[in-house]
Length: 141
Image (cartoon, rainbow, N blue to C red):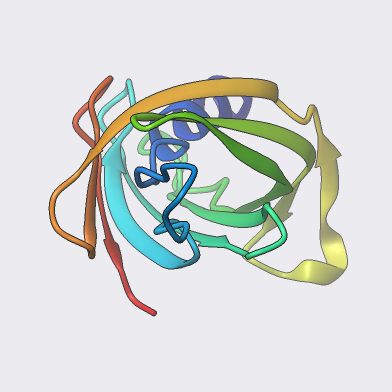
């Protein structure tokens, strides 16, 4: 479940982006939060922070399995991003780890996810919509 969930989460959450023309300040910079729906109908809370040096950090809250009640934790990812057009962002996920129960002392490395390109639209300065799957994120800082 974790690898399928991770793939769904990364694809859905990666769309937290904003338009950045060559002459404009990058509207991505800051922290974004939202909740997305996984392919198997789990609500997944996420947080993505974009830094001015074109790096990002993402955390995804993995809920427990409905069948066993176990398996919850946090998936942390980090890497680099770049705008490829006014309405697409490319993520290069360089590190991903799963931390059961959110405990950083027991994390295990996961496949990184590689390069992903996501389409989006901005709705004002503080809301972004993934146009591939409808996931919405809001700027929190």
